[in-house]
Image 1 (cartoon, one colour):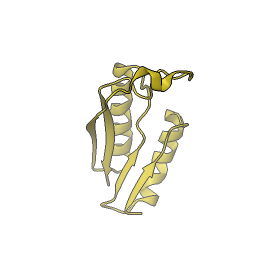
Image 2: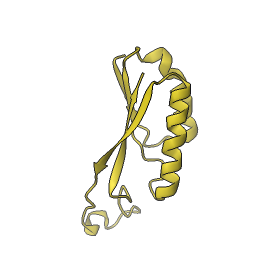
Image 3: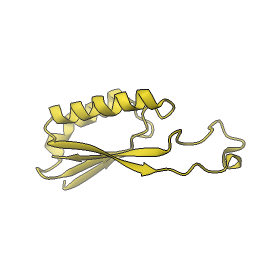
Image 4: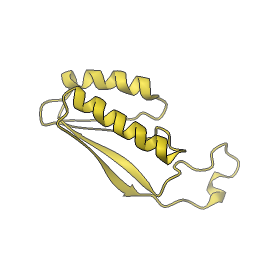
Amino acid sequence: FDAIFFDTFAEGVDELRCFHQLLPALLRPGGVYSFFNGIAAHDQFLHAVFCEALRRDLIAVGFSRVDYVPIPVEKPALDVWEGTSMRHWWDFDHYQLPACYR
C-alpha cells in the first residue's frame, strides 16, 4: 500500500503494537502510515509517554521518521454530551496526528 490509516478506536496499545509489526510487509518503502491516536486521552503526561513509546516502536520496525502533527481541537459545548457517559472525546487543546514515513 502507498498509505495506511488504522482506526484504533476500540484497540489498546498491545493490539496497536501487534499491527505495527505487520506494517513492513504491508506498506511500500516511501509509504505513509497514520492511526487514530487516542491512547491515554485523559492524561497529557501518559499520552506523551505513549506517543514516544510508539514512535520508538515504529522506528524499530523500519520507519525512517515518525512525527506528531499538532491539530487544534475546539471543545464543544457541554450540552452536546448531555445524557452520555462521556464528558467529551478529547481532553487536550491539540490532537497529535501521527505521520509515519517508511
